[in-house]
Figure (cartoon, rainbow, N blue to C red):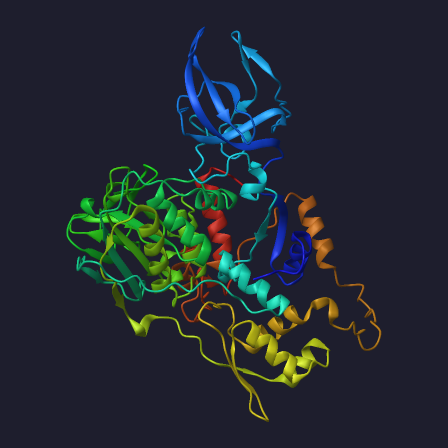
Amino acid sequence: MEVPEGAEALAERLTMAGLEVEAVEPAAPAFSGVVVAEVLEVAPHPDADRLRVCRVAAGGEPLQVVCGAPNVRPGLRAPLATVGAALPGGTRIRRARLRGVESHGMLCSARELGLADDAEGLWELPAEAPVGEDLRRWLDLDDRVLEVALTPNRADCLSVRGIARETAALHGVPLGGPRWEPVAAAREDRLPVAVEAPEACPRYLGRVVRGVDPAARTPLWMAERLRRAGLRSLGPLVDVTNYVLLELGQPLHAFDLARLRGGITVRLARAGERVTLLDGREAALEPDTLVIADAAGPVALAGIMGGAGSAVGPGTRDVFLECAFFAPGAIAGRARRHGLHTESSHRFERGVDPAMQREALERATGLLLEIAGGEPGPVMEVVSEAHLPRRPAIAFRPQRARRLLGAELADGEMRAILKRLGLACEAPGEGAWRVTPPSWRFDLAIEADLVEEVARLHGYGRLPETPLAGSPVMPPAPEDRLDEGRIRALLADRGYHEAVTYSFVPEALQRRLDPETEPVRLQNPLSAELAVMRTTAWAGLLQALQRNLARQQER
């Protein structure tokens, strides 16, 4: 998709459409004079055991460069800061003599270029890197990165595809992009899969891939895109799942098949169960926690983090790829309970597209085979159609939309806006339209939501300003009636504290305080502690009292 404007203009357009762009950052720190070089020869330094004297090709006459990196060797391609180059931090490269040997430049690590926090040795570029080419130009490091602050209701934009879809709709251009063909099974290996909690996991897909190359390395294009998104490259098996997560918004997980015992079961945790997570901490599981388990017990916190006991590593040759749809209510609050906040839990708590799992699994399989090889088995799928979310049609009245927006928008324009957003629109000659949101738009449920979408894409700045009818009149205030603000100030002056508590409370507490009233439940609560709307102030006051007493606070 071609965007007919620069990064700043796009950021402004996205912000005005409700996707606030907090920053537009350069893709790399400022540096110049760095080119792709190839090491031709390496000889010991005559007066220093840890230094090597290298003969380097950089597009002209070979240069002599002194280097102390442990991985320097003939045939290696690496960045070379030439004489006169400026590096991050203000370092200037000059011709120098190191222990009596002249050096015409510096071979660089990724950290010295500000492209990694840590680096062991020189940055090893791929063999196809063009010798003599300016590194910034070759890697497009003058690109810009947009940092978007999304509200919780716009989980559909937690991916490159989501932002691209929104950008295409705003510009009125078609959204292109590749369509990946299904990867044919090369063998019949299957891992048994059972889902015991279909209401929490309505769709679960998995696939065995055998014979991946443990020595494979993540290609530079993928590692660089991950870096720009704030993720560190951890090897092909992990990088592929992270890449698809960022690309499509669908979390995946890779298990080491050799470390699984029996088949996979998606179920709720049992009393006393524990699991050691990838970050090394041990999690004590509660009965409402959804887990991925094998015959020996839990191997992952579903939708949150994998377990250390089944993690892929440098020696992994056989993999089980998992891709699932977990209901937001089954994941919300569970990560925070264990002090976690992961890329996966962030998306599952807000909702992922329930129709995307097969596409994401096929994409991940294709990338894995391209990078690390292997032979895939067939896709195994367990689905409970009854528990998958449905997007019912919404009645939309064009005339009401015009009245709410105060603008005479034509029916054709509103219909075109809704279709650009991926909504199916049935518009009879008279009466309300039937508008069906796409599977990825959890936030569209009522007519007002559709009116807001029309306003967003039409442009809030293009809506006419309509003054209020009439002039405001200040009603007379009785002298014997005290203003609420004055009462608050008087009580504060006498040493009282005002209690400001959440409007949402645990359902169990609400039912104990007001068992006769059916509370209003949140469709997608942030946690079980904020599940329903309170009907009495006592709920918040008692929680505040409990908290203060537990901390020995008298007031």
